[in-house]
Image (cartoon, rainbow, N blue to C red; front, side, top):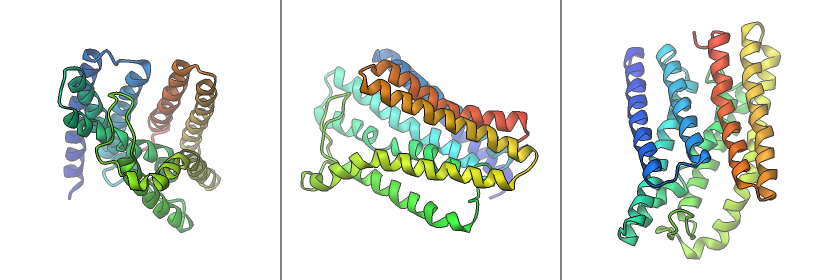
Length: 269
């Protein structure tokens, strides 16, 4: 496929994503579910999709642009299914329908958040691994997050909103799936830290504008990590609203850092 065709595909995907998030915003208002966390999440993935489309238009072969765009594309149906299921639930829809509508919201979130926390810092800024030594880690990330998708999709339990049971839950697999999904969060933090260290290796080998580009993105990741820590402390103390605020701003630091690298230091120019 030619570069022009790839750029056209990216713009079409961006347009579809904007339309989907427009529908999500409308449902948030109808469902009275427009909390700071939900609104911030919507803005985060819109920003990522927009930045990804800009990168693809300028450099259609750069994997980073497609990953940014894919996070927005993947987040849209996940959020939409959640809000649609909540709407149907509150208007007396069939329980079985509500369960299946809510189901993607229980596992599809792993794709965008997993990519943001690990794959993006590992491949930034040129879409390539720092060296061949990092290839086993890249394959492990693919296998690990694929297994998490399956685990969360099949984990028996009940969603928070709407409060319905997982229609695909396997009770027989609970003894394995429950601890595996519980351990996924600290494991993801460790994997994210390892991927961020790749920026240090890139920084040492880079010079000029490339160093500045990596520096700004690395700063964004450091801000995100600090705010995630603050979110965890706030949640532990019972301040859930403050925790959502810290977590949302932390994620927004990623597109902000990428935007500074792009606009100030001509990244992907």
